[in-house]
Image 1 (cartoon, one colour):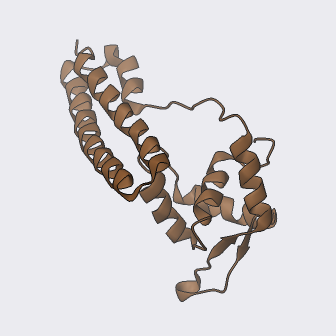
Image 2: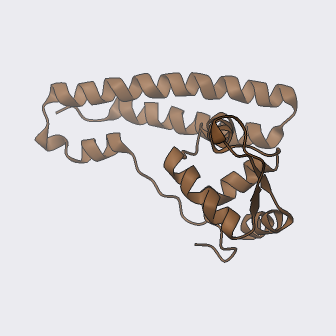
Length: 171
């Protein structure tokens, strides 16, 4: 954990809460919408971090709503923790690519199996690239240059993955 005492998932939640109070489900939706092109967050991570953030005094619970859902709001201490987290080094990326892992064991697969892996990955990356490009356009149109820049990372990533897939060995 960083010196700020906030891990990347908790920091992402604090960052999203700058937009206003949200329930866990709303935070999941906001994370998918705002960060999903390049950052994954699971429901279990969100629901594990929220009580820890509350215990640290970084978020406070609002009044229960429908189906006992409770909105969380960032506190001044949470804003300070987020600011500290932003000032820390970003740290090393954790690269985990399930296709590259399968390719590492390509010798134990048939050419047909590898072709299927590549075809599925290409389909995914083509769709994700199209979506990321559209999101970049929307972000630029709305004037959010920082959001657009973060989405350009996703565009570059999917382009690189597609280029790699074209040259990957099949046997």
